[in-house]
Length: 438
Figure 1 (cartoon, rainbow, N blue to C red):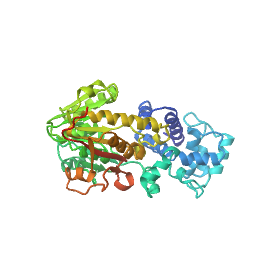
Figure 2: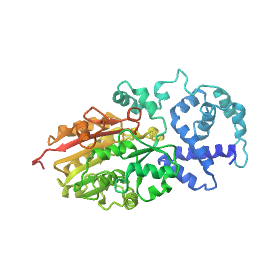
Figure 3: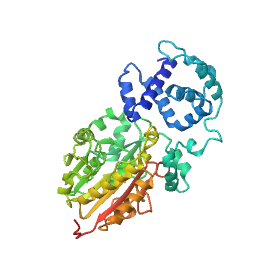
Figure 4: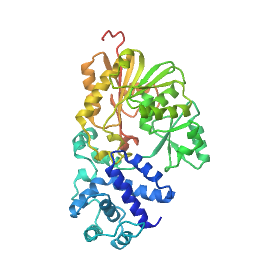
């Protein structure tokens, strides 16, 4: 593809993402699938540009408004990015908008004026507000400042950087060293991560889905933070375990491998589609003790029938996804009804906790960093149900690892800047033995 045709494709992909109520990665996958004529270099160039623009959403919007742009759309943002982000001179940008068959439409007079007004301007001038510079939406700023306690800028900067690629070793299919050696033979280099004994962080973004280790189920793509959530569930051979919000089953698979095929995991979700996707992963991993189950809601009749039967109840609750912003940069600008979310989280925790047997544990987790979705939900639950107590994370960690614990606090908050993982929250709650409450 020519340089101008790449710019046109960038505008088209960005427009599709901005106007479609679906995650950016899904939109991008469909976009490139429909354009198989694009080579890997073309796809890489277009994808990198579009994701860079998404990661600079607030900053570009601030500049467009300041420059008096007549419109703020995909085309205007690509133009602004070429000047501010890629730091191209006017003389290089103007020829990219030729109006030819494969290039974007010719620049209007207003767009030429916009280009000139942005020429040689710094992307982040001193007068730019902190929240804009750090790409923090208004609805989350106050809570994140509380959560990060003096580390707001450092942590928000880390959420702007593209996330690395982590893999989890399937313990049923081999060791970390065996997986590292197998990847190395293919020219893929992986290094042990800091916290998870099952994780490798690979260099770059190799096509792992086609690798023999992936196809055989020996490895899974899973962020180290997500792996820690599954590890801290401490699912052991012979246990009865429920993954209440299982999604595509990544944590259920990790727990099943820990259990060595002994015992049972029920992977629940209200989305049949997500559970269907988990079935292929279960098959590939060679796991036979995971049972998918579709729930009508968090208060499905099945929950009442299974009350008090499980040793472990993992709840990876639906949330705002703040901790995954570096993977989903478009998500931070989508509408979030925090009151509705926290109410749902409270209902899920209250209902799913009924599944725990006396002495059993409930592991509440989110990929959010907001106290409203995390500590406050746990505190409200414990105040309403005294039959549960909080197990400090360092105590739970000592049962699964001889290494240093990621936190000294009773509840765990993982962040990209501090732990080099996605943002996650986790609390371990234990049901009192001999409890008679209905």
